[in-house]
Image 1 (spheres, each protein chain N blue to C red):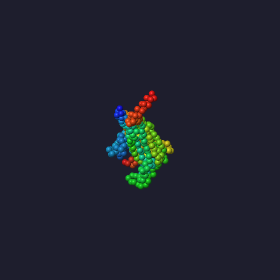
Image 2 (cartoon, each protein chain N blue to C red; image 1 turned 120 degrees about the vertical axis):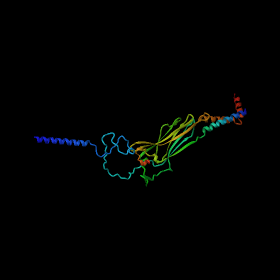
Image 3 (cartoon, chains in turn purple, yellow; image 1 turned 30 degrees about the vertical axis):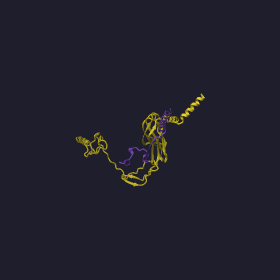
Image 4 (cartoon, rainbow over the protein chains, first blue to last red; image 1 turned 90 degrees about the horizontal axis):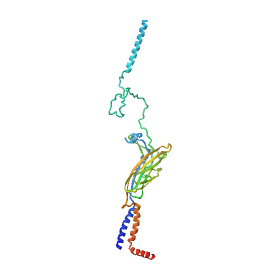
Length: 57
Length: 266
């Protein structure tokens, strides 16, 4: 009776602790950093009005 | 009488002859070839057709008469640079790689001032020469209201807010956008985090919009033995307590004592 109770308790503890750890473990996070130069934050200019020199041709 | 008739006849003949001469000269082709323009050819195809061709769409020659104009200065006209935001910024996208089903997590997009990457333009290119001097770029904050807009396109899980979020972008200040993501079923979800800048002219009120970045977002929604996050935590907590009580060394004595107390009351 005692060994059965102890065996049941161990199985229950292992399962419960596994569920608990999985449920509260913090997840990994991904971080992407992208530099944005001032040239990217200008007013939108139609391509047809941009002189060739500005386009680098 | 005969003389007057004769002179009248001669005058009439001379008139007819003059008329014929002028008429023939008007119908005769020009001796020198005129520059013509083939309107059926697209512009810019002169390299393949070096010789001028005859007019194909009309019989009248198309003559371009150059008109004298003022002497064009050979130096390039300096073009004022367009107004820009006078600070370098850094866009940071942060998202979880895994989310437990039933749970929610946060995706964060921050546009902050990059203090290490400030750029000061010190030269301008004119033709093939680089001339020194600081280029004065007009400050966009002075002429426009700048608004940062962000949107998260993600199919599958519940995303809040689902629409575009707007926040005013002020000089030297950061803006941060948050989305709450709540997956219900397991799977791999992919989406895109968009960032736009909207410029509103302070005087005319004219608006323009520019996409700054579109970054991919990908995460996996998981479960454990079929349990989602909240059920796993609840079951794990209760099971741990029950297991600890069952495994307690004096659990037998405690159970016997409890049973004896219950029998006494009964």
